[in-house]
Length: 87
Image (cartoon, rainbow, N blue to C red):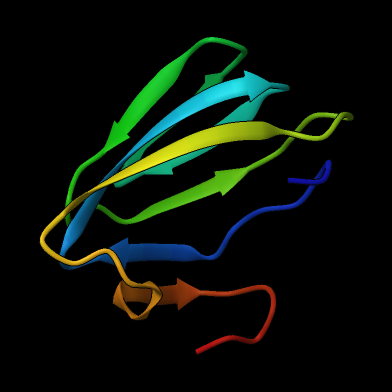
């Protein structure tokens, strides 16, 4: 993810996610908690949690995302806010 970029505010009905920072700094919003993660740190996004990933830093953010659940397709993304005009 490029510096100063962010994903849509979203949730999933059928999957949870584990995020691991490989390079850079991640700002993670999960429900009502915001946290900063740096290299080798991780977080768990539970099924149904409202979440957003942002890169507040000045270098590209590299992450590993592990999805788990009964359905892992992209149409399970429910976007609540989107900077890119997607539904």
